[in-house]
Image 1: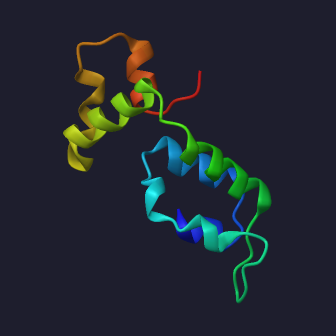
Image 2: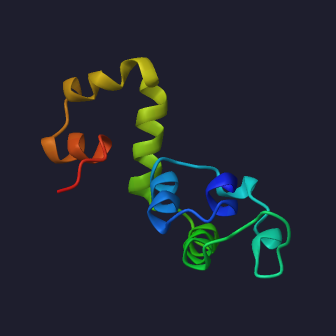
Length: 98
């Protein structure tokens, strides 16, 4: 998340990392404001999305999705389709847009 914010990436990247369970507490956002110097080029919209996400707890749905995916692990994510849950939940776990 730190690299995405420091390199001025689009809001979509911030949202993607948030959706996939990025640890928002690792970023020292105080140093990313308008007064930041050096090679830092922060996208103000992306920084605002990050600050809003950090100030609010994640939804239970989001936390459950991250927990299920972490429990399965990278090597077994393809087994999500075999879970005994409705297709709507499968699609949610796979981050498929509806």
